[in-house]
Amino acid sequence: MSALIEMKNNRLMVPDNPEIPYLQGDGIGPEIWQAAQPVLDAAVKRAYQGQREIDWLPLLAGERAHELVDEWLPQQTIMELKRHLVAIKGPMTTPVGTGHRSINVALRQTLDLYACWRPIRYFAGVPSPVKYPERVCIDLFRENTEDIYAGIEAPADSNAAQSLKKWLQETNQLQRVRFPDTAAFGIKPISKEGSQRLIQAAVDYALKNHRHYLTLVHKGNIMKETEGGFKKWGYQLIEKKYAKQTLTMPRLEKIKKEQGEAVAQQVRQQAQAQGMLIVNDIICDNFFQQALLFPEHFDVVATMNLNGDYLSDALAAQVGGLGIAPGSNINFQTGCAIFEATHGTAPQLAGKNCANPTSQILSGAMMLEYLGWGKAAEMIRKAVAQAIAMQKATPDLVPAAAALSTSQYGQLLVKLINS
Ligand code: NAD
Picture: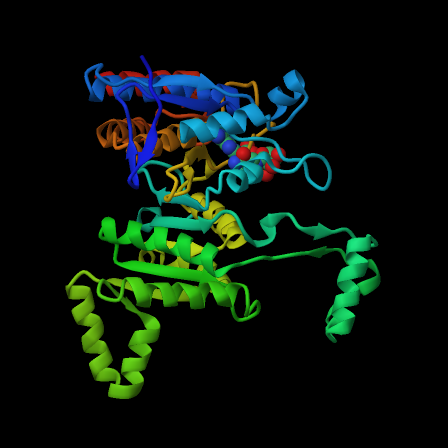
């Protein structure tokens, strides 16, 4: 008999037979899910000798939901996701410029899944455009509910744009808009609470996993109140809540100013020797460059929604592309979480049985880890590493002549788990 996962006293209570919803997604979604599910089931069965088993519950969203019930994200689906707390999903189509709003963004906002955590790791044998992809070992925490993703936009010529222009005129700022007659506007909310809860998730993760560096990535030199606020509130939180376990750059700068370079150097060395978390910040464009040149300088990164969106794809490309990078959207306070492949629906590959299901499979492994089923998660990662080392994978990772189809690759992983 399956049962529900619950959050009690800030702890996730996971039964041996949890019912877990899945949303297959659009485009390549169904085929990567069909390859992924048996891999997750095989790992759970092998790791716990059949004592644990997931009872999968299909839920409707995206194109299939639109076809069947004329809704992109049915209320029933949202209700079930809330009731079950933990779920996994495939990619969903979002039309550009027109059409329905992003289902992904709607899910993150409706369920308040504020932390998008994406671990970026290299598997030996994956083709990469950089010289030393093995130096990338970064956990990116992207704020998921704020920023321009709030979707508050005023089309050019609309009443809303007129009202905004009126306010800009009254506050003497309209001259900053280069072409006011034809400008559309977007609103970028960044709050203290929103920033601090995301940064807290990143610090907690870094401390728990003994990572050395936490970097706050922002564009506060230009957007002083929003992205600058993110940085300021981040340091405030860390100084207030984690002063004993961390050394922040502002604190080190103060020591340098008051006691000199040599003392600051000594303090830094001591902090490192004691395993304290070193917290600094960097401007986003510089981060792009530094992460390419010296990825080993970064462990855990916390940033806002738009920066995080760009950065996670760029970092994924460094380790061999979106086909293998997993992701999650989590509210660490309610326990609610949705795990998902980080890539999109890849419409040009849909129905061809050649898409790479690794991102979906590794997202499933993250989900198992989140449930406390780390042994099964580790088995999956080991099987993926083995398959790639053997150069047995989908055509995006190995030469076409030797490539496996999506389903063959999934079957190989099941075999490796069971061997
Ligand atoms: P995409 O990720 O679908 O494709 C980008 C490139 O990566 C393409 O060349 C594609 O072939 C390749 N690719 C992606 N996944 C792959 C896989 N598993 N195996 C092999 N190759 C893979 O991005 P896009 O083309 O910009 O977007 C297509 C659609 O997906 C859009 O509607 C977009 O809104 C949506 N999207 C959804 C999500 C999500 O649901 N989380 C994320 C990104 C994009």
